[in-house]
Amino acid sequence: MLATKERTTSLIPPYGGELVDLFVPAEMLEERTAYASQLPSIRLSDRSVCDFELLAVGAFSPLDRFMGQEDYQSVLDNMRLANGYVFSMPIPLPVDDDVDVTIGQDIALRDPQNELLAIMTVEEVYEWDLEETAVKAFGSTDLRHPIVAEMHRWGKRNISGPMQVLSLPTHYDFKDIRMTPAQTRAALETFGHQNVVAFQTRNPMHRVHEELTKRAIAEKDGVLLLHPVVGMTKPGDVDYFTRVRTYRALAKNFYDEDRILLSLLPLAMRMGGPREALWHAIIRRNYGANHLIVGRDHAGPGKDSQGNPFYGPYDAQDLVESFSEEIGVTVVPFRMLVYLPDEARYEEITKVTDDMETAQISGTQVREEYLHKGKLLPQWFTRPPVAEILSETYPPRHRQGVCIWLTGLHNAGKSTTANVLTTLLQEYGRNVTLLDGDVVRTHFSEGLGYSKEDRDDHVRRMGYVASEIVRHGGLAVCAAVSPYRATRNDVRSMMENDHYIEIFVDTPLDVCESRDTKGMYAQARSGKIKGFTGVDDPYEAPRHPELRIDTIDNSAEENAHKIVAFLLEKGFIRPNH
Image (cartoon, rainbow, N blue to C red):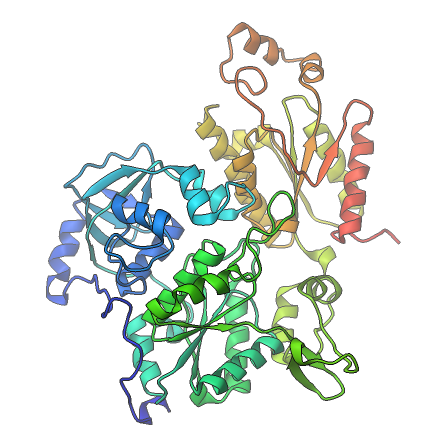
């Protein structure tokens, strides 16, 4: 259908004038691949693989590599590359501290499955400062910010240099709608409209989003680039397989086919609020859009550990608008719309008078009053095909997964409480997996010592297993000292925020020592055990746990019942009948 339309070349040019293309010429591919197979390798993280793919295809144009120190610092300080082009998000390639890499060296870049991606000639190896990056790029050092928590496990050095791209990461899903910037532009040109309105989305689309995008198309006389993120989004977001199924249903059935293009974006979001919104605008220009719908609290990570939003609701719109003329992308603000049941239509809230009856459903209501209770969303709020897809993905709350993470000093009473709790929860019909730190260590943390790095690895392994249990609807009870806040927040970030319940087993050190039948505290005091939590290594107590339990005045059974009451209140278990 698209191929029959008259072509036009009036799309906005890529940022910087042309798309960066890092691919090795076809005639050199065999020789370069053979050469790369002999080189020392670095495996990229999932985040860096996403960044690599978008660098390779020109989505980050004019950036043509993982950032060197000058670009990195300039972006932190000025939201510009060293050459002056606007760029608001640092794109580093951190390497683990034990990786041996030298300037001038050729290295092979591989994905986590060891598939060969590219050759990099290392031109820079430089140290970066976590706190400076957190404050300047994301405005906070709060560990509830998912990228800030994640950065604590990155290597302390970044590397940079030109890349010869041999292949892109392999994707087996949705191949027909995975398009590079060049392919997206070619498709958009067939629509015959100069204006392209991009809609950034990492959530399912409801009727209000549909209405908003249709109004934007009409207002700009353009085409909608429905451009969902299918890389890394906020932990706990609806999985992209579900989301893409809903987008396809909407695009096929409820939009004019000559006014919408659905294309997937393998972006690793930072949840960086205003800076991220500006970054999104630059990326969408490279895909051919000259307008971007910027939502309320665009790319916001939620609330900090004090319960306050990380960013203001309109900070993102304001920042993008301030750069709009320079980057060539106009902001389409996300207007608040409400449904008028008497007239069966949506209207901007600023145009609604007191005598008009309105209907709204908040995000909290969507989850708690509909999805968690297994009820279909009403048709005025969500198209029936979308509601059905979401109901398949979201079982009722009492069948959803949850992780209960007990943390505290050695001998605080974590394991005893966890054992009692595991028994009680089975009485409520839940499938429960108990992950005790000491037991788990013998099974899949064997070989790890008690250095900070090894303890962090142990906790993250437990967290990963727990997150998989939660993802599949199970209930994971975890008992581990887990002494460091950043690592516990890392685990929290592996799952939807309210599906991780941190319980501080708040037992004073002297009480823990008095309970120590194995004499480990005594050995630590005498120097026979080094790096023992609470003696010569710190325990960082939770500042904002979901629950705090006392094992001096309350028994393990009493504490377990307190946790059960909390789970009943949150709907993760149903009262016994």
